[in-house]
Length: 395
Image (cartoon, rainbow, N blue to C red; front, side, top):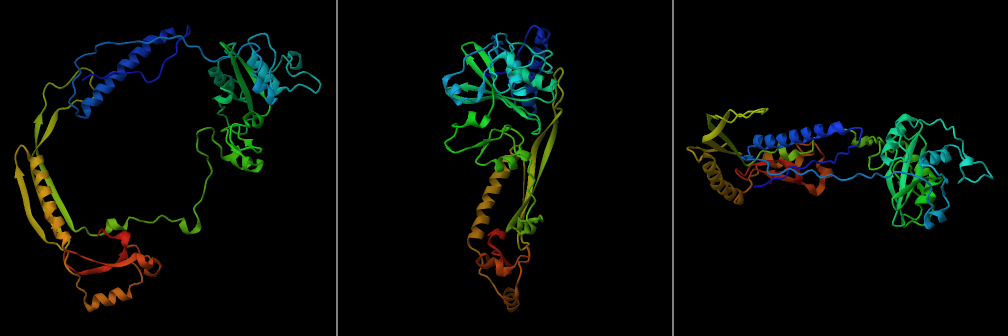
């Protein structure tokens, strides 16, 4: 049998972390040893004879990163909600953020560099230009007042590259990363609702949450959603208290309180044998003994207290004999249940039946239960038991 060990996630290296290559290889070797040891602990019986081959796949990583000015696609341009700053350097991310934080005054062209200040107060320490989308996480940490969403444009439709994970009280800055071949460019989205309009079949006005992108028909619904929103693909945090009549925890599995028609009490005996020569170098868990079933005994008790004689066996095939014997007795028990004794109602039983107002197990009202209520008796003896729900009986 052949088995393939694979690293779950790819690892990215650059000139700053080349020394970590050997650490990744050692970690992978430890994971393989852990898998092999896990098989042994589960008693699979597998034995690893050797590692046949090891393959290392290497490819050049080209992350999405913004650069100099690119003309907007025609459909995006027609939406008239994107400010595309015409920068000549590779700092388009910074210019897009300036367009969001320092809006151009009336009469100025928002696409020109001169419409924005060069002193923006943003901390770009350690951020590359052009900037990969992945580095925006670091940029947000260095600037507590920044929460950035990055969208993309693919096949004439808006896609999501990242959503800011900061609290909802931090205003979102929505950016659009457009691409032209190997070049890409950050732009600023002024109105998210206008950008996402047309993404759904709903033709009316929609108000979108900037944390999870869920759309609402009214601004009121959006405002009610905001305090509960945890971000995309996460559950809301709204706390819903139970209603007045449903604020108590009650036991519901009443059928598990009923006396079973038959109960089997079984016991096994085992021989404890030593395992020699199983310890391996650097193995955390070592097996020293194995339990080999050598015999069993069981007794069947009926609901009326009648017992069937104990059945026992001793031998190497004890487990097989146990199941075969139990299957034979199961047929006999099912045959008894198939021919139940007729019910025997005394005057006392009739009086108890007619006077019952509650089920004796769950204490619910017999009147409220209506057709769900019925009398139950022991099929082994024919004796009347009580009234209960249909769902509260094993029969």
